[in-house]
Amino acid sequence: MKTSVNLAGVELKNPVMTASGTFGSGMEYAEFADLNKLGAVVTKGVANVPWPGNPTPRVAEVYGGMLNAIGLQNPGIDVFASRDIPFLRQYDTKIIVNVCGKSEKDYLEVVERLADEPVEGGIAFGQNAANIEHITAAVKKKARQPVIMKLSPNVTDITEMAKAAEAGGADVISLINTITGMKIDINRQTFALANKTGGMSGPAVKPVAVRMVYQVANAVSVPIIGMGGIMTAEDALEFILAGATAVSVGTANFCNPHATIDIVNGIEDYMRAKNVDDINELIGIVK
Image (cartoon, rainbow, N blue to C red; front, side, top):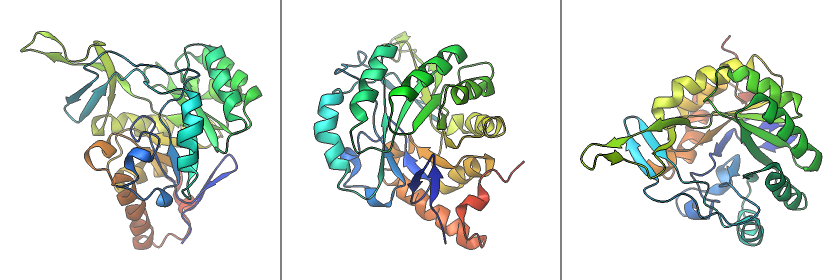
């Protein structure tokens, strides 16, 4: 039974990876989940300099998920390269780095630093089609690894964003990022998050995410990483059937630290039950 998938020349042993910002850089979950069994670990966002993140409170529970406004707190590329990459290299899994920045210069500085590091790919993200195409092209010129563009769902037409990323040279497209939401504490009569708004993730966003993955899979020719509310193997398989080559598991890690491994095992069980020899046979078969 073949569970491996290919993302722009990078072979993953299976299609299951973590979602950025929900798994640290792997070290935090290593005692709960065997990183050797994951297709890839996607690290928390890494900037050219340390970012302190947003003021607290930064997380709030909502029906069917959570809101977060962490603000991409991270120790910066120097600490990441000296501490986190060597830790992850101990495991038989691929490393995908989420690159963050406040300007094109910031993005490119991190991408240039990563060019000589033993990582398999890098993710950047955006909301404006023209900006996406521009930043993708700029990053592509500097990157030695495949470039993955992560799309925001907070747009009118997700396929327009996907086509812009593909036109800019993206090797892989990842979606969806969180949906902007708000929660108000009626007892304190103030916002639940210091930032007022935050990104909503969790099971409630999954139908939106599956729909967008399906639309994008039928609009571009590059591979897709699907995410948004994946809690179980059944959820992951929905994304694969809709057209995702791989999936990322995020919020599930907070309530079930070994969710990723459960999903890997569940996909294999499904393949056996359906007599599927190669997982690639399932990608995008629902039309």
